Amino acid sequence: MIINLSEFDLLAIEGVDAAKFLQGQLTCNVEAATPTHSIQGAYCNLSGRVIADMRLLPFEGGLYLLCQAGMAEILKTALDKYIVFSKAKTNIVTEQYCRFGFIGQDLGGVFAQLGIAEPPQQGGLLSIPEGFIYRLEAAQPRYELLIKQEQSPLLDTLKNMPMEADRSAWDLAQIRSGVVHVDPALQSEHTPQVLNYDLLGLVDFKKGCYTGQEIIARMHYRGKAKKRLYLAQATDFTISPTTQLQIAEDKTAPIIRFANDQNGHGFLLAILPCDAVEQEQAITLVDTAGQRQAVSIMPLPEQQ
Image (tube, rainbow, N blue to C red; front, side, top):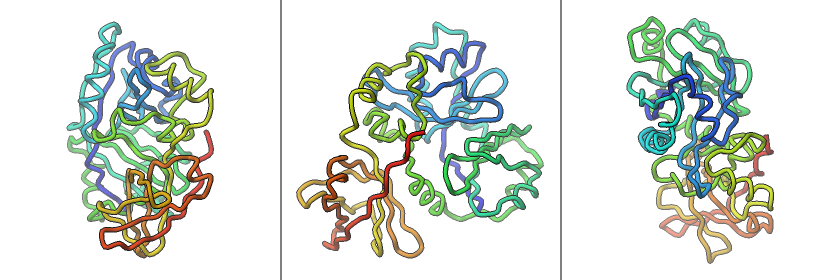
């Protein structure tokens, strides 16, 4: 499948101090972002809560921060408070690019038709004249192509290829990978631990200081998180925006993301108390008609 992933924001950090500046701001080790490897990271406030998460894409003269739609202006405003002391600047360049997703078992033929190589490893990044192609960090092979809007043979070829009408399959694969990206509704709400960013490799606990580092490190070294993001699934139950998630019949938990597959099974990402999961308390989906369905909780990702 080829899917138009048109909803995104792209913030460029340009200048000789771009990487050095970001190293002191983001949770990840910026030095690990190379022309052949893309990494994920997050930017937190002083209270250790995630303002935005992003994918780092190095280019000559700086780095792109790829984030959710609506987050570039928020991220730019936060970073501009500190960047005045560096030889670097921020610039929102979302309108200069478009983005496409690729998902499937054998995409070699598709990439051959486009005349681009297939990054073999998770996080693998290849720069092409028109932009970037990179492989996402997931067991199921998925790729994204970030390409300039200006006319090019590659973009013309891509637009003439069969394109999925909606992105439901992509959203489902994203949920099943256990990853939630921060949008304006989630910004500054949760710590990296709650969103499992510490388990998924978005936090480097060996790098130097960064914004919010003291609180994030203290939570990491003093004990386990009380709440975390869990992947859950329900058999023969279609989840809707009005569906509630109940814990032991007297508490509710927020559903952060959800999707349904073609067989009528529901998948969701929800923030749950770790004790409730470990004690195997009843966790149930309830719709407005009173229909109930117990969910199966998937194991947390292993720390990278």
